[in-house]
Length: 168
Image 1: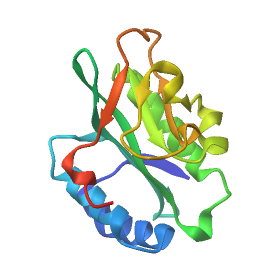
Image 2 (image 1 turned 30 degrees about the vertical axis):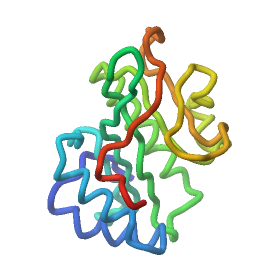
Image 3 (image 1 turned 120 degrees about the vertical axis):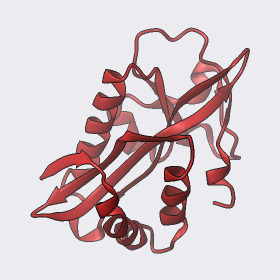
Image 4 (image 1 turned 135 degrees about the vertical axis):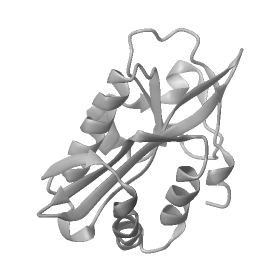
């Protein structure tokens, strides 16, 4: 398996993958909207490829943390693995590769709304423990944060997702 940055040539395969993984088109539309926005980070849009076939995708893009000041932070959404390739470590490999690239870029934190047993393996913890509030009415354990750099001060407030996420 190879993990690499997505290219425009991959877009149709990624859309098909997202449709297969989520069984509806919201995530594919979300990715398209993010790509067209100023929140898109090309280096943090990765695909997993097996024998030339895109089998997984992860996207980190900028969201806002609004507290004493507004800080751009990473939001991890979506992460998808084609159903035929799930439970083979592809999702984990994508998260690890994405977080390593984010760290290299000097990004401070990443936030995810997701499954705690999966994301906690990568250092994600409930964000409320750090004074980071979800904009969604979800149980605290599902809205998580991980720190990519040692500095943890100043990262508190309410998360605001950009307009690309509206309607999801």
